Image (cartoon, rainbow, N blue to C red; front, side, top):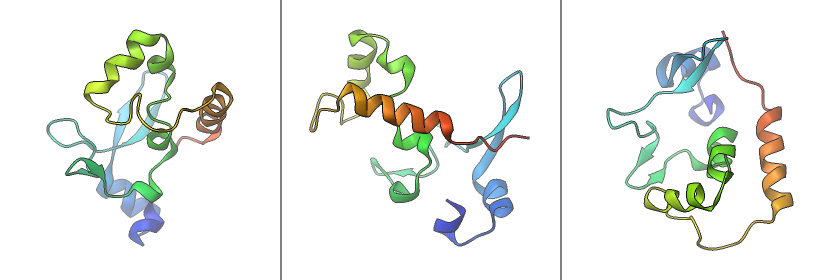
Length: 108
């Protein structure tokens, strides 16, 4: 994403990220607006869509959302793509999740 903005990684981290304490470690996370929307979410869409991090591109295929049909269907109020458009195979979803696990965290 730093490349998207043509800035150095440390500048990007300072301007667009915050430090999150997970307990066992700390990591960087994108900042949010006062309503907890991502700072890059504007008018119902991501303004950095093509360069978004894997955390974002793998949504809504996060493990907690895939626990059961109730968890999945509850996303319909916040994610307009739920139960719409192309169906993804179990293999495809597992591939997305595997890629997400391989992506290194920028941690402190």
